[in-house]
Length: 121
Image 1 (cartoon, rainbow, N blue to C red):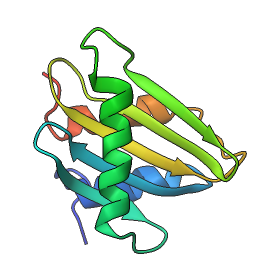
Image 2: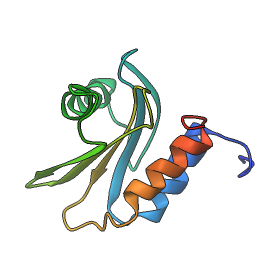
Image 3: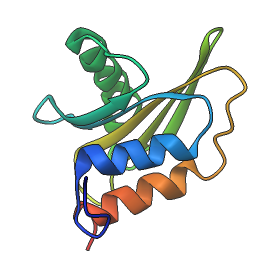
């Protein structure tokens, strides 16, 4: 069992995912390094799918440093949510949600995660 006071990427992702009904997958990645830092999902996801999701996040959030801090991609099968970490960081939080899933509070949960893992001062 993970100590809730100790930063743990997998534990933090699991706790966040549990807060959002319909959240099928959360991925934390460093898009500059091309590395998945952690993920939590309802089912095992192939690495290629994780990489593709991170590529989407990079395309949507990292092309322009002054661009958006978050983006949504609505699909017939659900919603992909992307949150950029604070500052000059290249970390992103990606979420895959079922149709009609409630996303209220997701930006705040992402900001909390980035603070917890040290992505913000």
